[in-house]
Image 1 (cartoon, one colour):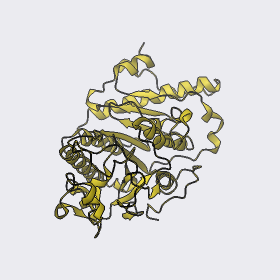
Image 2 (cartoon, rainbow, N blue to C red; image 1 turned 180 degrees about the vertical axis):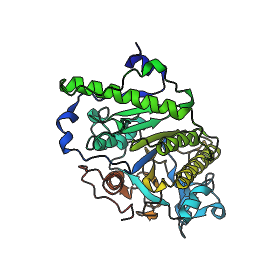
Image 3 (cartoon, rainbow, N blue to C red; image 1 turned 90 degrees about the vertical axis):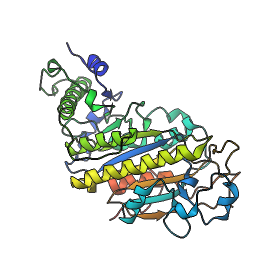
Image 4 (tube, rainbow, N blue to C red; image 1 turned 135 degrees about the vertical axis):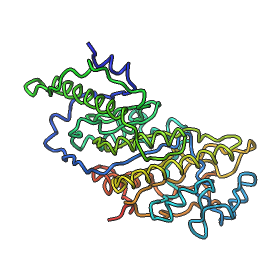
Length: 393
């Protein structure tokens, strides 16, 4: 028999079933999912992106003072105004800026910053400073707990990549999944033997398990069908991130009910020889996101999608002796899509007004999340932070 364990071993689909079926008692209170629901795509810039050389404060005298070797040529920057510009590798983000599809939130961070990768990432993913809550449920998982699961059986959230699924998408009752390469996904005909739904006469736990099993196999069947269909017309750079965004686009275009997609771009821990590696990372980010939005625009689906790019912290203001930068605090967050309130948001951090050599944050990252949940996904939340004006009314 092709059971759930065998299915998980044979495919690259990893289901993250919630520990308790609490949603069964709360379904009546949940908001109903809609076929045209908005979608959020999160890109995690893993390792701590150097925000100072991403959104460059070229007019700040502290930039040349602290970045003697890593200072980027001002005449090559993509100017956003008379004070800041994007790294020259981000030409495609420049195109998004010119077409009002890019919002830059400067100096995003949190109080009493932590320079540990694991701790800081856990704070960003859970919105909690309590270490005991860093392995429980994430900000997106908790939000998706508030809405009904997609009617087509799709997972509420999906990681596209070969990393461990992030805490951010783990919920108490919402279902998350992970998939790596769709062309390696096959489902034997014997796997789908029954279209029967869950036994509504069974107890809550049995019903939950049955429904989850049916949804898992239905999703597997759809992925198997999608793998057999080439995606004609879409053009992406040949990079890991772009390949993942291409797969996300295919899932969106095929009608998956998933509301949150997640991808990781690693490599941002640039302690040494930063200039060439950071150039490649930002080029791949910029070109991949641009291709993704253009793909969806051609399919007339881009107005349903917003991309959120974040990193667990920025880098130190002063470069180190290895032509790199060390762990810092605040950094920029990008939001991309036709539905965002384009432009620069929050104050540009002052490189001559530091806290022990680090940037002072301009905005709490939880205000960004508050905006994403309330203004874009339209999901109730209990964050106390006031949302920023990041989306068009």
